[in-house]
Image (cartoon, rainbow, N blue to C red; front, top):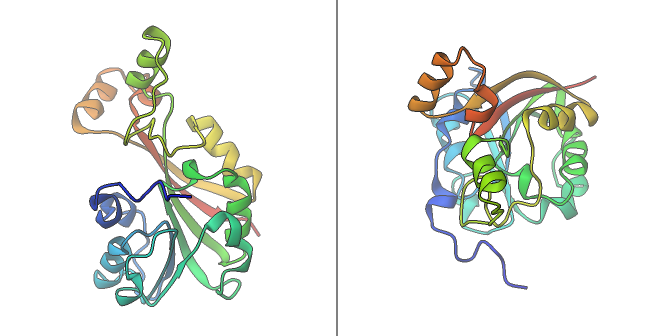
Length: 215
């Protein structure tokens, strides 16, 4: 079967997630694993900026990632999450940036990833917000649930979440939410302030999540 990522633009795999980087604690000894790492540029940025000393990645697409990373595994994470060649309790941080919504069973993947995190280790994620205002207008007022090449209704998305469901997702598999941030542009941040935060869950394009492994 043809890989659905064969035709996507290179930027899909080479983008550096500075918003994710900002959530990573300052510690030069961090051991970090990224699921859906693309080319590995976010991990490399974390290492070069002194936020990690060991970086590993997993992706379904092979792009010579082992050149940049300390370790790379090319696989379908849904099929191999429980058999990755990493030691248990090894990583300080695992990143799942815009990954979980692409999975058939993100609950099972999160359960599997827990074993590779140290006690109190962090899982940092970003997940699109299906409750976002323009998406709701398109669905409810225009009657159109049409998949697109990118964005909230990306044609490769299999799961959809609101903020409440994101919290339930993590807590149901043994993570404690430390912080959950709405991600929105400058104009939306202004509108959010003018609405005294009442529109926050409609203006967020995605949520950034910092969750801690429960003991």
